[in-house]
Image (cartoon, rainbow, N blue to C red):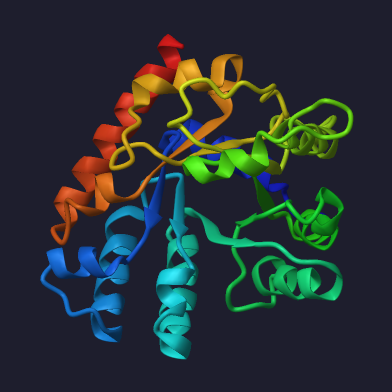
Length: 279
């Protein structure tokens, strides 16, 4: 039997647990604010606390790979354990790795995150399409085969992104819109939701693009970056029902107390539900 597609699993998780993604971003400053050392012991304690507090209740957990990679192989071991334990508790794991390359190298990245035999196998991974959307084919194919998902950078929340993403392609479309149209083609016919998502910043005010890709829209920027759940309808319009808002520091700053983490996640989830419903 073919594995259930990521888009269907995500839709069910969002409907039952609420449309919230919580980042696991062990910044040095966050470790310090939790009273932890900026070392492998602090990393392990921080990560375990977040997973134990949230993996049984939020739809998506999104570890940022770079904050684990900085500790070398021991950091990757912590990441592997976090992925395994979060998935076992029912959360979908979105690996925030933003990989982008060509040919066999992209194939190797796909094998790392999208092959069920890999210790870092995740429910989805973030990728960059700005070597050309076709460069993502190994990841797209691997995700489809394993029932995983791919979130493609489209309109990111960092201001520098506009110089590439808002540039104009030969046919007059912005490069971001060109990528979004490729995603829509990948998701054509999928139900209830395609498995190829877009990353679109919640801080944009107005996306200025057609976001009807029949796939999920990961929306970073809520909380510490300045966006609020109330901003979502204005940015995403008719596609707001497919938005997966991502909050990191807004939840993580409430640690190390597990109850504080849970309360913050529940508050954001409730505010997002209200905003999406009103939108």
